[in-house]
Image (tube, rainbow, N blue to C red; front, side):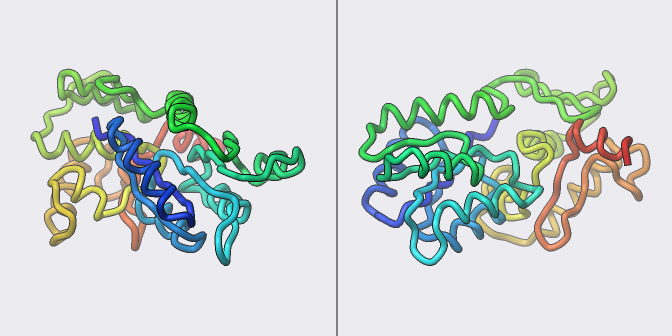
Amino acid sequence: MPSSRILIVEDEESLCKMIAEALSRQGYDCCVAFEGDAALNAVSELSPDLVILDVMLPRLDGFEVARRVRADRASRDTPIIMLTARDAEEDVLAGFAAGASDYVRKPFSIAELSARVSNLLGRSGIPAEGGVTEAGALRIDPGHEEAYKDGHLLDLSTTEYRLLEALAARAGHTVTRGDLLRRVWGMRAGDTRTLDVHIFRLRRKIEDDPDSPKLLLTVHGRGYRLASGDDAAERGNA
């Protein structure tokens, strides 16, 4: 199962890199941004599992970044830990009102921050290493490298399984083409036609009607999204 990705947004570069290095040693996949606009771009492009967000950022502060992350359907459930040197109660309340999941006051220890990260990732629905993932009618079992639909074993190639596993780890969220190339093929960049061919083949195996997909959805201009159980419920109530 891919490691959880954490976006660290902090304009003090030395602190940002220190946090990234410490969390990377614990097995997290860390990326960084030093100001608000770059943070929003990173959330859109990288689909992090958690965001560590400083309040005091140039041009676009952390409160506004958090509000915009929450306003986007693709990232609205992403946990956010806000960092601040402010300790007034109204600042903490403003952070939670903007969408913070947790609040850490500076100065802080890496051990404290790590514990909060672990706690939030455990609450956010991200499967633990080796755990079974369920997305609607699909069930993915990393321990046996098997996938099922409605209880029936799917006949997937190794690459098709890895692609489905990467999408299921972010079920309900858009996974970019670049991210899928990196996670499945280990490529930082490359010809996305290979990805498109495998998406086509995977749809033929998991969709009732591959020409009108309900599970593996294309997000035009960005990538692909595996529908979650909540998506199915929303369609049923529409």
